[in-house]
Length: 220
Image (cartoon, rainbow, N blue to C red; front, side):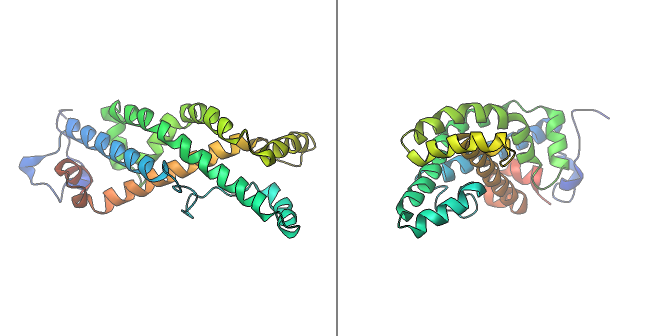
């Protein structure tokens, strides 16, 4: 088959035969969906209360801190617990805007073969591609900013001191042994969750995007 012309099964009902979707157009459509989802997710999360006021992505205390938090609240120190949770979410909100450039770059360099797999894939295959390509480098970018944000939070320092010992005794998972790394991981979870939500919207109603290319690629 001529690689320049490939009619995707998911668009067959939406496009007349004379408007067969080329592989190049399909790749362009997937790039557009990737970029649109990334920009929307960063815009939603990378602002004040983007994490804190959204139950879907709000970063909770690590499980090991829950009992300690209950004790602090019971002894009249609820404010300290609330400050820690707020600081954790603020750190994520500050870090997320750094993702935009890397995500857009990843979207723009997607190849035709990857685009075909994404179009044929699951309802969140765009997001899965993003996560595979960018999660690790984004974590590297996020962590220093999260660390800077948490420096003045005394409970964070005390948690890290306790956690490093708890890991040695097998009482805590290694990935939860550093509060800044925990926040970074949760920030990335939230980011990809929201990218996934944007992808679902595009797939469910591509007409709403106003993009004829997205309508052709993701239309049913």
